[in-house]
Image 1 (cartoon, rainbow, N blue to C red):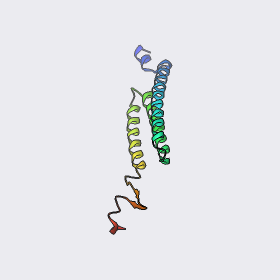
Image 2: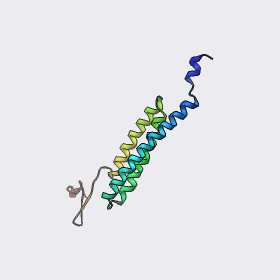
Image 3: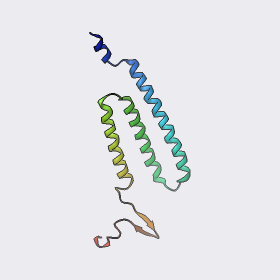
Length: 120
């Protein structure tokens, strides 16, 4: 075996360094997300559904952060970036109720479709 072949094989030391680096960066992001949660939870206690949506976003972001940092320098990084983007699109569509906002005003329901009452 030549030296070039030996160098291309990933060593355990490099893998451990990658895992530790990814874990540290993910932990820092996790602390930032937690501080944001502490700030938001004091101001928004009336939104019960917000907690579930927030933590889904946090856990997914932390997973993708860790996975992308581990796969740094490989083609898998780009696949994970595309998957993260797709997840964010699906998350936004779901959390906004597929883009239809409804507001409860004076006992009546106001939505973008309420002006088209002839369609109902």
